[in-house]
Image 1 (tube, one colour):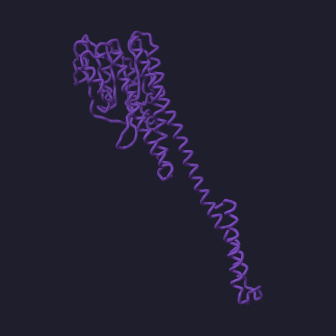
Image 2 (cartoon, helix red, strand yellow):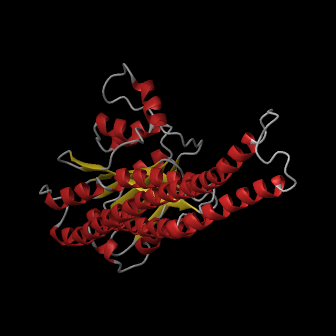
Image 3 (cartoon, one colour):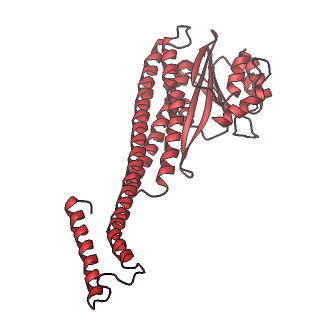
Length: 354
């Protein structure tokens, strides 16, 4: 969050609508992928942005253009000018710390969502902003980096003749893309569940790294909540729009992913409560261990206090001390010390202190 705010400082003083990429994910490549399709055929092209724009203009079919790489804002300008996209939308596409949202620009809808994945190698979540522009016969999508998305199942489905995506308007394609993004949230939450179970076992052992792992997990869960919670409003907003871009048949499917989103949010809230409870349990176990250590030290100190008193009394430099000249004086004093220790141990045992 702090890094994102720091990157935003580069926009200070610029006119509204000025696109400035503020993300940390840098890529020299700028990839454009185009699908032109209808019920009878589907054409797939990967090339430059100009080729995609010319290709889509000549085609009377519906089309989907997916752009990978947001650093080259000049290229983005040419794309948005082709489709008469507002400059504020272009600015939001470049600002990769956007909150998930949906906005109605009459001729098109603009959506922002977060694509979240779990990095198995580093055992942490990775997030990427996905922006969508839905028009009457087109869908534009914008990603920060090439590759690594979850859209491959949709790419394969759109190539199959007779598929519902091919028979429907671009709003159903938008639903399909949102559906795979949200379904991938379940995969991420499953990984979080496994990490929480592992930490529960580790919590019993109270290893040194447990509190750090809990802290990291709590921060990641907070990030997930911030990324997914607004998505419920986005899906709900899509259902309410009456501008003709979202068909009635598609709204039924949107209700389904709305339910999925609510389910994910419930899981996140449950995991947050579990993590908070685990932190409390960990701190309580640490305090209990500390109390046990203090109790043992207190018992030892208490046992040695009378012994120290006796030894200190007979260590005084006086000529006349009782039993000083007696042949049984040493054994007598030793007996007093042993009796004192035994009495205190019996008393502590009866009190349940040890």
